Length: 190
Image 1 (spheres, rainbow, N blue to C red):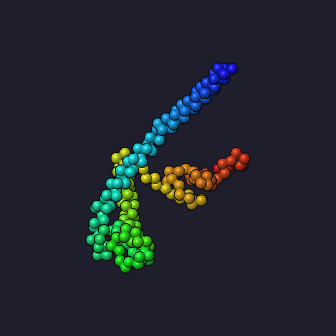
Image 2 (image 1 turned 90 degrees about the vertical axis):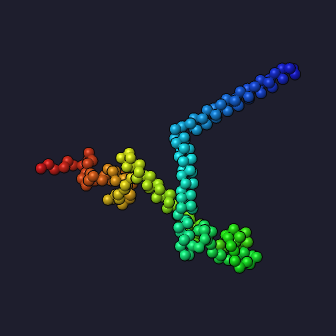
């Protein structure tokens, strides 16, 4: 009886192992199909390129633009280090040389220099991307920048090339001005 019991335990363990390995193979196959789809690879490449592009623009702002801003009379030092102390920390120090000292003391600060630096980064990225889009349009004769207009009926922004509004479903070429239904009486002929 004991050998038969051992055999049935082995059979159940083998069946469980086989079912688990089939589930793992199915999961692996699904994962491979998901990862190697064309759109996922395009997104991955786009994210990697955008990360490198962000580093370049950050360097442009911090190494090329910020030094000129620091020449202005009210920016007498490194722009990201400019801050105001709104309330001193519990140690009650009167002055802080850096924002890190103020934060370590628990002071409440307004880091307006970091904010200005971040805004400069944003505008630099926007300008560079706009320039790249214009260059792409010049080289390929295909515009990335899509011009829009407002629908004359619902006033929503739609593509300049649209024939029908995607919001209110109105035709933009004048079809709404006369009845085109099969139930409508025929238009008078002249």
